[in-house]
Image 1 (cartoon, one colour):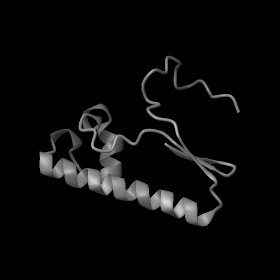
Image 2 (cartoon, rainbow, N blue to C red):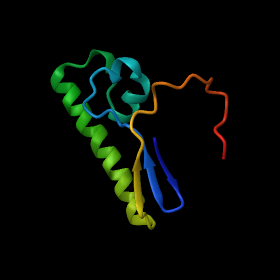
Image 3 (cartoon, rainbow, N blue to C red):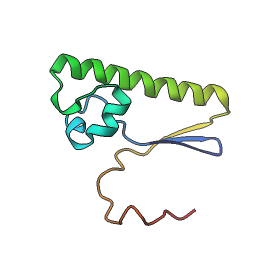
Image 4 (tube, helix red, strand yellow):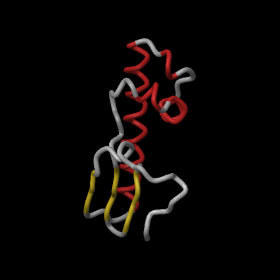
Length: 93
C-alpha cells in the first residue's frame, strides 16, 4: 500500500525478502515481481523477483516524491494482519 494524503506519503509493510508472502499472496506478488509461478520459486529466482519488486516500489516512490511536495513519510508497518472486519466495510473518511 502506498497512498498520498496532503503532503504525506503513507505506506505499510512491503514484505521485501519475506519468502512466505509468495505463498500467502501469490497472485499480487507475482504481478509485482513479474514471476509466473510465485509458489515454486527456487532461492535464486526468489532473490531476483524480490530485487524487481524492490526496484518497482523504489521507482514509484521516487516518481511520487519528484512530482509533488512530500513533507512526511509515514510507514505504518504491517497492515495485513489483525483486521477482523469484512473487506466490504469502508474506512471512515
